[in-house]
Structure formats: C-alpha cells, structure tokens
Image (cartoon, rainbow, N blue to C red):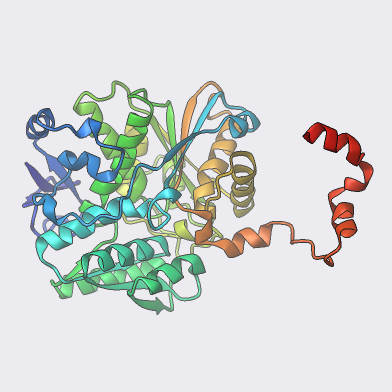
Length: 420
C-alpha cells in the first residue's frame, strides 16, 4: 500500500527499510501510496466521525500495526478566526491555526507521533535528533512515552530555556554542541548511518512528514473543505511547508477538496536561503553559514528539505518572504494583544510576513488567508519579557494602585451605579 521513493530519481524502497537518503543519487525520500487502496480503506472506515487529531487520519498513514501507535493526543489544534488582527493588517478574512496547542507546545508533535510509532514498529531501541529546541522537546516526550532511549544534540547557548527544560525533564540525553544546528545535524546523520540501531527522527525522515501533513488535512476539514486562498508558514528546516503541501495534494487527489491554496513561506532575514532562491528564480539554495535571528526555531542556514519546499511554493504559485527580528517581535506582541494568542517568535514570523506581503501589494486584501503559528510562547518566555513593559512595583497601598490605574479621575459613585 505504501513505499518510499526518491524525490529526484524515483528509486523505490520498501516501507520498512531504514534509509534516510536515496542510495542511488543521495536525495531525500518521500512516502508514496496506492491511492486505490486508501480509497478502499476509507470506504470501510468511520474516520470522518472521529474527533480531529493526527490519528483520525490513520488510513492515510504508512503504519501497518495500529496497536503500536505512540500518542499524546496530538493534533486537533485551534483554528481561530482573527477579525481584530485581520482588520489591523487590512485583510478581509484571516485565520490562525495555532500549533502551540499540541502536547509539547509545537507542531513537531504531529510528525513525532508517526515517527516514533514507526520506530516502535521497526523494533529499534534508540532515537536521536539534532534540534534548535522544539524537535528535541517533542522527540524526548514521545520517546519517554514509548520507552525508548533518546539523545538530542542542540547548539550550545542558543536554545530557549522553555524547550531545553522539556528535553531534560522527559529524560533525554541532552548534548550541547559548540556549533550551530547544521553542524549538529551532520553529526546525527553520520551516527545514524554508522549505528543502525539508532533511528534518526529529524524531518529528513519521511515518516515525520507523514504526521505533519495532517496539519493540511485539519485546515481543510475545519473550513468544511473550502480551502483558503493562501497558507502562510514559518520556514526553518522546511519540512513543515513541504508536509502541508503533500497533505493538501493527497486530499485533492482523493476528492476531499477542489482547489489548492498558495503556499507562502516566511524566513527570518538572518536565515533566509529559501527566500533568496525563490526571489532569484534559482533551482538551488545557497546555505547561510552563520544564521542569526531571535526566532531560534527557524535559525537554520542549510534547510535539508529545501528542494521539497521550493517545489511546494512553485507548484502552488505561492511565494516566500523574509522578515527582520524587529518585525517578528512586533508581530508577536500584535497577535497576543489583539487575539489573545501567545506564540514564540518563530511562529509570529507568519504574521509578520503576511503584514509585509500585504503592505507590498503581493497579497490581495480580499484573500482568505490562514497563518500557521508553530509553537507556544512559553517556549521562549525570556524574549517575551524583554520586549514588554516591566511590571510596576509599588507598596501595598490602595491609593498608590489607584494612581497608577488612573482611577483618581473617576467618580466612584457613578462607577458603582454602572456596576450595579
């Protein structure tokens, strides 16, 4: 029913073969299906009556033994109509798909539930990843749930404490590497190739993408099969925008939606190789050797899934844009203060990018747009505290509080009558 296929040369591999790159040309793999078999399975299933979650879509997954599913009830995240924010940005219909509502606080849980389930199905005992933070937190949680040994490599001194604390408390072996994410990823790739009993669960692993594609399924189902004109996604290692597009194309092929949205990728200005490739019309990306941005989750200079991301953007007639750290942090506060949604800086890049594209005239104000926010704000509370006004400290005195709140100018009798 399912198999692995190289995205470049088309070489096929068995679904249970542990392979991360094509042995013929060295490119990435993706999972392909017999769609007639999926249709047959769906005809016997009551999947559309199951509450929204990743495993509502189990018939779309490359898992053979559902008894081995490792889940923390991921997926089914909020889909927020954002009228106040949309009015400020000047767009007619805006939704925010908030992935920070997943169990460990990021979209990574979608991919990890499938990836770790596949690890259990394959009988491996150890899992590993390189991470800027969210992947390590998610893998550590799901490995703990499955009873697997877990190791994560993170850049030393460049990970938000909210994410680091998660990886540590879940019991992973956390290794801080004096280098950036790209260097850490190179190490875990070599380790997983050298030691076959260590299973790699970065987004290079195509089973991760299968879980993340359910984000696209959910957007479609939450809009009652009426697709938006555009989906705006933060881009780091580029697995998520690729996964969403894969899911939408599968839904389209199976007849669950009739039009496809424009995929729009947003990167931080200090880590924007995909944006440069899109703007220059290039078929390759030039890695950024020293990526820098306050949005640590997308601080990646050499995104592994760049080829899949370029394909998603171009096939969908979408685009890509970069935003500065200042634009990201302003968008983070704007989203929180207009819609009550607290997201980490990388998540807010989708809002910042949409604002920039609207201001430039690249997005029509009549478009229906979904912005994906990828992680919860408590992942990086230090940054939020730095950009907000400091708390006001006073003595425990009601008159001092009244003065700060400007209540001295009000008539308390009028107020009490209104309240009563």
